[in-house]
Image 1 (cartoon, rainbow, N blue to C red):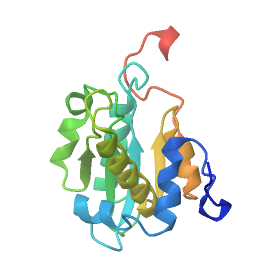
Image 2: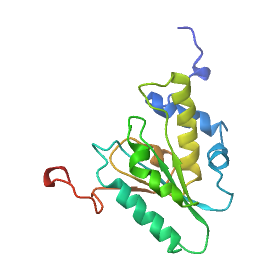
Image 3: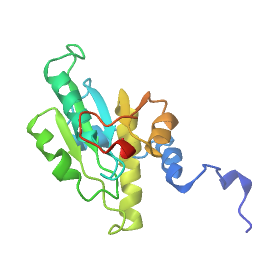
Length: 171
């Protein structure tokens, strides 16, 4: 196509193109600022799944919030950011009650079925910036675990249903 090799970057699948842009300084610090999280505080990010794959995630988030309120993670101020999956239409129903804590920030991703490509790209910049600012990522199965690894973030992958009542064949 006549494009010089000096202008070509191999970045992998499209969703990881955002990491390449972030390394060039795009959107750094926006996530912390937009969520109202002060510099110097610790961020635990929890990336959720739609309910069909995220059985019991709300009970795990509740457990983390309870531990933060009891200061079990030390004296440093800790925030829990709970981010929805773009295909989750019940996120606020399942996690909204945790917003009663001032240290819990709920972030509803744009819904993939009703968003523009520009909005989804903007969200990917936000997601990667949030992960860069985080101390740890808690998530179930999904590509967000790869997102965390791409920014050298420790990832805790959930493989249980918390304290939710779940049919044995789905737990």
